[in-house]
Amino acid sequence: METVIRVGFVYVFILAVLRVMGKREISQLTPLELVMLILIPELVAQALIREDFSMTNAVIAVTTLMSLVYLTSLLSYKFKRFGEMVEGKPSLLVDRGEPVRETMDRERIPPDELAAEMRKAGIAGLDHVKWAVLEPGGRIAFIQYDPADLRPPEDEEAVI
Image (cartoon, rainbow, N blue to C red; front, side, top):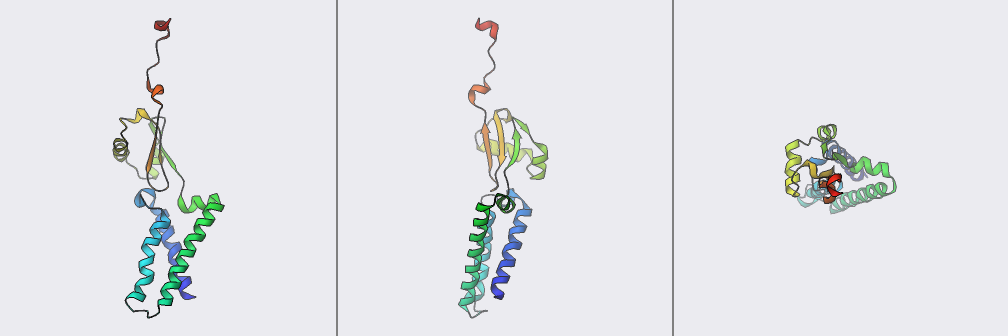
């Protein structure tokens, strides 16, 4: 039972630390995936190097971890607020071509990093961006204006 309690404590602690760190630091991995990647080797290491001669203890530890991941996933699915607490919410970085400074400051996204991500996405400038959203996984999604919206308005007198 001590193994289950220890794994549970470490799981919750690492998950909380990852949430506090922010989205950009973990980038491509979800917090749950990262926790699993960090903990599984640690849980089986003692059994593998024979500090703990019981493979049963390692199996119990990994089973506890997988059960916690499954439970967290299930609770995130069933309860939206719990899911937002564990995984985070998307953050609006650009609104109709204008940077949202408060959000960029809170998420620690400097303007040059936003510009670099726009270049990677093949976007020439902020005037082409309707919205830029920092997703919970750390990726920045760009929603561009419809090309028709970018054309200058026709002069009504010239049309008549």
